[in-house]
Length: 269
Image (cartoon, rainbow, N blue to C red; front, side):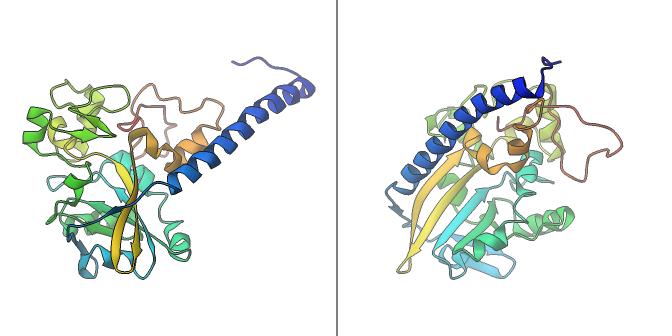
C-alpha cells in the first residue's frame, strides 16, 4: 500500500508530477513533428489485396483519401483466430476509424490470412473497421511483419529495425528460444505452435497517395505501438499501472466476467 497523506500533501506531489507530464507532452509533440518530416519512399510494387468489395489495389485502400494507416494484424494463413493482443488493440478501432475517414485518413487492418478467415473472425468480434487480406502478395514480407520458415531458420529477419531472430524483453520472435507456457498457450489459441505463431508480428505503417502514386511515410513495431493501444493508456493511469506478472489479455469474448482479472505480459511488450 502506498503512503497515505493529506489532500494538501497530495496536491504538492501531484503538481510536481504535472511538471514531468507537461515535459513529456512537449517532447511527444516534438517527436510527432519529426515523424511527419520523415522523407517518403515510392511504392513500386503493384500490391493486390482481398477485401469485402473484392480485389483492391493499394491505391483503392485510400477510398478517396490522401492518407492511409495500416495496422499489421497477426493473423497468418494457418491461424484459426487472430492474435489475442492484436485483437485487444483492434477493439479500439471501431470507435475511431469513421472519425479518421472523415479527416482524410483511412484506417485498415491487413493480415496474411485468406479474406474468408478474416471476415468470419471480424463477425465474431463484432468489428466494423476495414480489414484486407494480403494473402496473394508480398506486402507483409516487404514491410517486415511476416517471415518464412527459411528466414526463421537462417535468422534472415528484420523486425523493429533490428536484424536477425530477435530474442529480448522487447521483441521475442526467435523460434529457437523455448517459449514460455503462457506463450505456447497464446500460440495454441490461434491454432499454431510457437514457431508458426511468430511468423507473424505486429506493426503499423503510414502511406500517402499523391497524383496516383503511393508513398510509404512511416512504420512502427513492438513497443512503438503502445501509444495506439488505448487499454495501456488507461492502465498507465490506474493505481497499479500495467500490473502484468502473467499474460492476462484475452479476446474480449473469452473473459470470465464474474472473475476479476490479474496482470500479464503481452507478446508485444
